[in-house]
Length: 269
Image 1 (cartoon, rainbow, N blue to C red):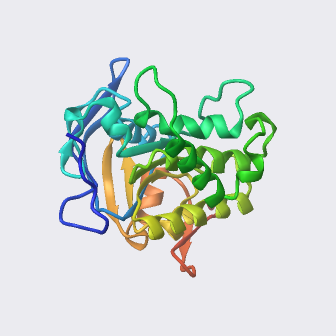
Image 2 (tube, rainbow, N blue to C red; image 1 turned 60 degrees about the horizontal axis):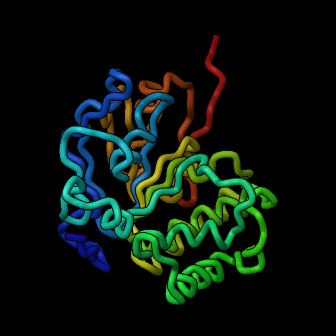
């Protein structure tokens, strides 16, 4: 049965992960992760390379075999058929695979796949939903363009458009600002936050830029050695002690207008 996401925060989490274990090619990646994300909340997962951030998102999205319990809006993910899960959760991967020659319109239409009958075609309602998303993300003028001809920031908006076209209320963003300049980073994150507030989306993301992550997340989870080492508000997680311990980096954390700013500093000799 497809879960019914709430329109506002409720006692039932949008995402609940209990005792999650994931191994890849026989190597343990996640070893007992517990995490809960409230409906309408933005939680960003941070951690050093190899900590298991992308693996966690892929497991929540049903893309990896895992042990433990993953629930989406109160329904165990394992009980959902693939099409049902796609109506609830949409994923924007770091580097989505785009078939050569595909136009913006055709790519975003792929987001309507969970609603199209097997061997069927998209309906007028599907096309209308896609055009509404394209207009919302200021992509209408690009709808006949091939993705390969767009800039990095434009492509990132198209990837987000496909996810939104799914009509899902849980958005999984794996490094959504990777390879973007600072202007496009802010543009994409501001857009996600605006859509979250307007449409009640829940966001679970991974990010490397700690300062940028701290400006947008309601809470942050620090992964290290396959487990959650810390979770809380950005001010509680982005501390010099935690970052120096788990990143093995020399940093200073200073107050910012919207969250802590993490500044790398050269270690003393």
